[in-house]
Length: 212
Image (tube, rainbow, N blue to C red; front, top):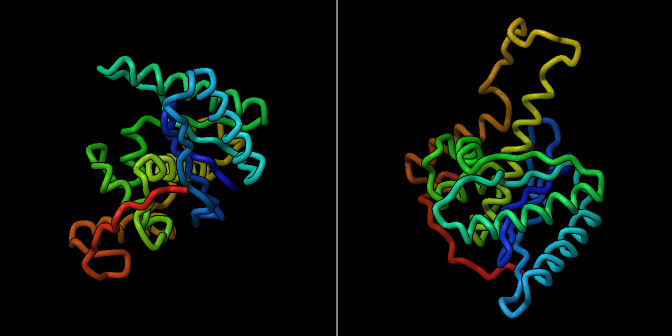
């Protein structure tokens, strides 16, 4: 299953595309869609829509994961996120793709294990879970990959539940902690506490590079 994760924004929209094969996750593509400040809002939204359409048609995702709109003190930021989200929802609907939403807190818990994780911690966990050679940059792309990971893990958990069961409380809880994904998360958290990199060496945050 291929999942497209989106961190919405009008000036810069992050995207991350991963593939889930059973419990295993791998990164396919990630980056940002930038729009020029000189463009009008309608032109920015059109540019985002056309770029998203290209991504969808190129990678043919089965699901689109997008950050859920949450209350913020910055009204201008909330409007920008909401407008970009609308374009994402439209692109997904026109391509008959299902949408999965997740709050920033849910994404942090799914990747870093706690809702107070910093962007750097989320980025390092995304690197570890997907086996990337370096932390994905910029932060918007790392956040989009984290959203895709959250959605992939949630879908995998739901798929364990028998479709014919009506009373979920009667189901035997699925064993946890033994899949490759869960082992990767545990190992990455342990390395995070010890200050080690993906292969056990002392970790160093790579210099940011400009996304293409």
